[in-house]
Amino acid sequence: MDPQDNGLEDPGAASSVPEPADIQEPPKNPVKVASDDYPQWLLPPIAPPALTEPLGDTPPPLPENFPPLMFTPKKVPTDPVSPWVVVGLIGLMGASILGLFFDGEFGHLLKGSWDTCLFTTLAVLAYAGRERPWAQWMSWLMLGGIVTLAAFFNFAICIEALADDGQGISLRDTHQAFVLMLVLFLSWACLIPALLPALRRSPLGIARLEEAAGWTNIRLLALGTTVSLMLSCCVPLVILGEPPILAALQRSARFAADMTGNRGAAGLLRDQLYGLVWILLGAALAVGWGITRDAGQTLRRLGLERIPIQQLRIAVLSPALLFVLGDVLDRLITWIWGALGWRITDASAVEALFSAYTTPLGAIVIGVTAGLGEEIAVRGILQPRLGILLSNCLFTAMHAYQYHWDGLCSVFVIGLALGWIRKRTNTTVSAIAHGGYDFLLILLEYLGAH
Image (cartoon, rainbow, N blue to C red):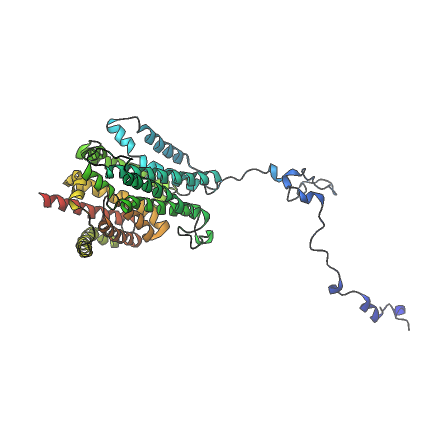
């Protein structure tokens, strides 16, 4: 019987149907057309497809690439800058500029904003540069300007340190000219390790710093700034072989008058308070207040929080413990340095440098301004980003203008202790510890002299 007569298919016919594996797949690479060789923004707009059905209540969807890229709106930054940030930054810049033209007490108040203005502007540009390339480039250019200013400061302070009896120096002296040029060159060369983090490399060029590890542009800029200034602060001490400010004070009475501005003890204490006011404003802007953080987040980022009951004992006892630690360190380091025949810091010159502050009132003012100001800048801003060791290295290097290597060792160990207190508690506790330590140091120095 013919299989087709009963409506059945021939079983052998199924074998003639190609299996799915035998079906040839379409080519993976589509056929290129002429438009593929041109950028999208050069092509004319793609017309929407023709309607095959009458237009109803819902219009048909447009193609994914319509309209062309050249007509798409610009990306709106997700971190808008608060108007208060602009007002605060303009206020800092305005105060720094006006300080050049005003004398008297108001002029000194304005001049207290100079250092804060530079670093605050640098940080604000870094935060704004998260989604604004021009601000990111401006932040790195400004870092170059700050390092250049530090190089000229080192050059100027070394001129005073090399001067004899305030008579100045002679560039015809080959040795003095060579030393000054070397200080200027090495100080400016400190910009090189600052730019290495911008290339996603560590300051020593060893390991790459990846975005996945948290090395954002803000953290890279903080790293470059810290390493550059840390090296720059140590250049005069390394080249001269002695702290430049102490050397200048010993050689020139005029330098002492110029450095203090003939302000007297009361005026110098007021200058300390003026600087603290600007630091408090600048610190808030420097950690992203008004850009990525509100007021509460800014205080938490700086570590300025209320002291819990369990941490109150640390805040009360730490100044005395730090004082004992510092005294033991000074005695031990002085003995080691003397045994090795190395030069130590001239204690009488240090006493003369801080003589204007060696009063009970000076102990209080320095305890508040140095304790709070330095802790906010180092342990509040830098330590959460760079860790205890690197931030403390900058804290130590900032004292290289007035202390020899023995004094810097003591400062380094005290700074490590303050960094540990900040890590285990908050900046409020470390500020109390730092301020109390300075207060005890100055007050006991005053009582010993009287």
